Amino acid sequence: MERVRDRMKKNWPLWEVFVRSKNGLEHRHFGSLHAADAEMALENARDVYTRRNEGISIWVVESKHITATNPDNNGELFEPAKDKIYRHPTFYDLPDEIKHM
Amino acid sequence: MSEEQIKELEIQFEARIARDEKIEPKDWMPEKYRQTHIRQMSQHAHSEIIGMLPEGNWITRAPTLRRKVALLAKVQDEGGHGLYLYSATETLGITRDELLEQLHTGKAKYSSIFNYPAISWADMGAIGWLVDGAAIINQIALCGASYGPYARAMVRICKEESFHQRQGYEILVTLMKGTQEQKNMAQDALNRFWWPSLMMFGPTDAESPHTAQSMKWKLKRKTNDDLRQQFIDQTVPQAELIGLTIPDSDLKWNEEKQQYDSGEINWDEFWQVVKGHGPCNKERMKARIAAHENGQWVRDAAMAYAEKKEKRKTNK
Image 1 (cartoon, chains in turn green, brown):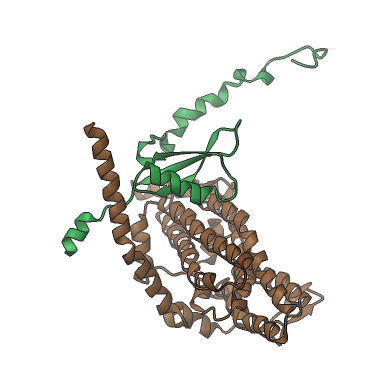
Image 2 (cartoon, chains in turn yellow, green; image 1 turned 180 degrees about the vertical axis):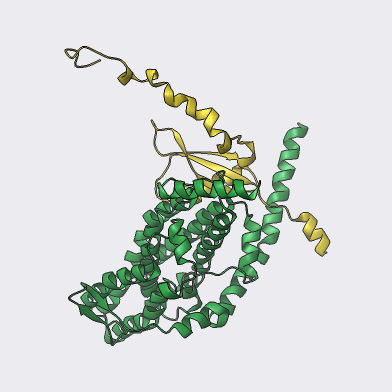
């Protein structure tokens, strides 16, 4: 019996929860939870993350489907942007007479 | 990785924390930082779900519907708070199963306050006012913790918890406007919960083995004694306002320090309860383990059903 139990015992997978707090705003990552399937993940997310009118729409995605960058590679990924200041409007000189552009 | 490389990473890590940068789950961190966080965060999570037990007992006995919906919502919040904290702890590479295993075997601790019984309705007032009040002071300090997922969970919890304290205080305010018997009940609840609430902040700074390292890692932002003092200073006037007497004959206002001086805490009692000899340790663990074991078939069935549905979908 014990052995059957062990074989049976599968943990509910982890889901990431994204909530849109109101129309006009994007879905934002709110947290995560365990659930047996997507439907249960939505129900649990509703109970856990929107008890006080925090949202009007919920997305859930199983955590294993998210591919993320590795912080070890942050240098090569994100640092090159730092010296490309010509991508920002403040890089360009304007005559003083121009107030708004 | 060589020892030298680790040393170098540690120096960089300490510098990041000193600059008030947040640490996120996939960042490199010293093993001790990871373990200390797992210990403290899981202890916090366990406290939330064990904390549901003494109050859960009173939901069916709440005196009015207003009190019942409030208590129900509060206990539900605590379940949610436990979940935020378990999820945050899991980002450190430990599973929910392992965390619960540590709780059920006694390897992990939870706040000792929940090992005291809640024997009258007034205790619901005292717990909300004092226990949640103390928890909020602790948690506000932790909103600035260095580990991102912990700090975010704390922000959310603090936002939700302010009603917990108010609903508790309101219960006592109401009792203190009632009959002599009701007033006695409120005073009795304060008498029993005052000292255990002060103990919630943990041992004195001199006796707290983890404080120095935890302050350095910004896992703690204020010391146990500072937080305890803040709690006393904030709570004493609230008690006086409604006619309750703090059960501490040494308590008096210190004009020079602009804070209250208070009596010595019974630390023997504190350590006895931590070690498992409090009035309700066994009862709480028994209820928790029973809830977990009796729920196993539900979790298994839900998983089996999800797999069956998935199979049907792919067979179509």
